[in-house]
Length: 345
Image 1 (tube, rainbow, N blue to C red):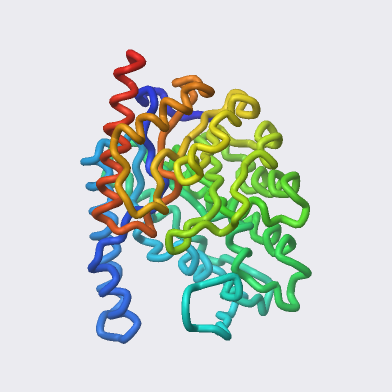
Image 2 (spheres, rainbow, N blue to C red; image 1 turned 90 degrees about the vertical axis):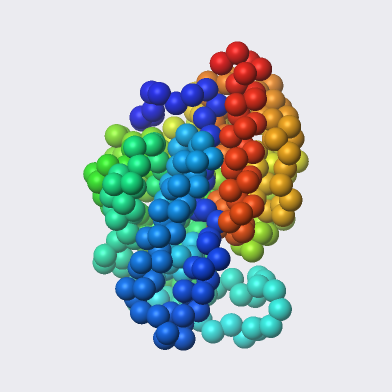
């Protein structure tokens, strides 16, 4: 259910994660070497979340988040809530992370998430800090098990993913009960399910089943680990015919990093859903001029009505230095305002 009634035309939405303040890296090191305690780190995460909200509000974003600062890391944080796993020590530790370092955990017992993933806490924090609309994201089961070796407990990663569905559904419902009006399903691994796109859509729909009082957004991207995509085949067309079967109000797709490729796709397959389009390249180290971002928006408007188009970065800013993330968000807001004036809205 679309829960928004007062957004401007071409609203600017953050993806979730924000550029990490430099001092957070010092706290991570201090936790690792024992010179800082858990209370110190809790204070640092809280301060970072307040700062992210301030950055996004000052930039003029219409839908914000807490920067996902309480998670500290997109992958490790979620897995730390799951029991039945053990870390895997990589055979190769030198050089860049690669495909031989994909599995970071091994399943040693049936999975459980006894205390949830912490979304309720994030919702309560955001409600206490801002009156602006906000989004709460959760990494998908397919993405979580992308990093897990099934071991001898499950037959394959698909069985692992389905085993996690009940915990995801419960977590999202708790977030909505706590006051979240907009939940986001973060999915850079939609292409990995053995049953193909049909199975992935079934998995998605099972996770969001019963979430009738919130805007549901499916964030479909191709990964952004250390500023690099997870796959070389970055196409949405194979999945697009299945959009109509997804229980989603908003489909979120990256375009900037792909040279606006497939900008026409949503006209054919989007139906009555909203397109949240990535028009800021978070994998690029340079700052796009406002006019460049505005031109990306104009390209999308050739195929998508203005009242069905939201604007966002391609992915989260967690892999982007904070000063650049802030500037990129400012340029996105300025570009949106420029195009709004051009279309008289």
